[in-house]
Length: 69
Image (cartoon, rainbow, N blue to C red; front, side):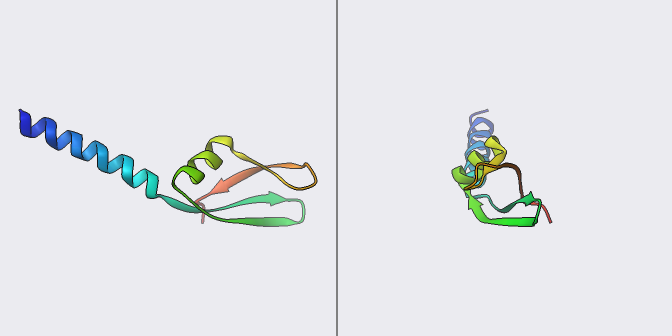
């Protein structure tokens, strides 16, 4: 039973660390076309995905898409 609990704990830690290292390219669709925001990783990617929007320098807000091909 101790081995099972230890194994499950390790798998949980690995999945959290993998999510922190996850990276994706992000963009938004502006009227003039797709605008690349670059590659975001870890907490930066999570924060951008949770927010879900990007506001440009003119104050226009667009929906962000990350990790799509």
